[in-house]
Length: 464
Image (tube, rainbow, N blue to C red):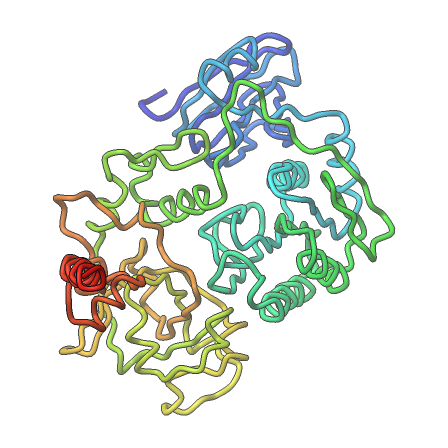
């Protein structure tokens, strides 16, 4: 049709389409299925998000189907396995057991999915959400959320691209602040209970041992799911209706899966460079940036000035356990990823002297987005912030500080490029390494050679 829109024919038992990038698929004629979502009415659309792990497949459910693909890149193939092997893609083949769970979840009001790391929880959540068509999704995975950057717990509708409620924990694991984590999830469930218009689908993190198992059981006690899907080696307590599934098996032609820090770096790169997604390149589920293009693009983003006198600061997660003054907390901000919040969402009225919010208020405060603190300007009493959307600062006057920092792959733009102020030599730890020889050299006021000469002279005197 034009440069970004194509009409493609798919036949049952013959051609299949593998979507490689973010796209909008609309059914024109016939019926087709995309990741568990059935398109059987003319004009019905589905938004496909770019996945770093699995590539969605369009399969015809009628003899002949015609779809319109807008803004995406696709592969038309007869053999999914051969195409996946040629292009290095992991294709989501829905097994009979997974299809049975998808149909079963449609008849329950609250469904919870749990299991260890890398077993297919996010994939199953996406399939069930597509089968519902529209459903509330509560994402409690801090490290690898279904949508958006890490460090948040959130709830949103599947058909909406914006979050209904998002709370900034400021960490990639609930290990250091489990009570704060559970309080945030309890508030999200309370928000859903006030809506009660659609079913709820809960995605959990992959920590199912020790403290992680206790947190999972606490989430189950609060949410009271009618159906619990346990993938892999996981046995939650407190649920009568439990279905166990085998983990998703990655194809043999793919290399090892990207690590959790690599996937978090990729999610942050996509968040900050949402306006220029072509810069973010992916290889085997991880960010591929050998020429520092991502760091240069983030460094080139506009920087916005925020006056310290008009700001309040809240410490969340593990950072809330520290006893620190407002001035010291402000001085520690350069290089940190902070959440953006507004005093409009405060449930309690605080006077202007409360520059550092109480932890019990800051930890459940709704968050608007994420920003990178570039520099602290003491002469003008202001902070320089980098964020993907300048409208986020329109009514935000609270910064939420956790322990989340940007990866070096996002802020390093090459040896010849200008660096962020917090990467300067005087801002990094440049003291001599404290080893025994250094301590001895400082104590004696001599270098290593002088110490060696003194020892040699003393040895000669002893022999004489």
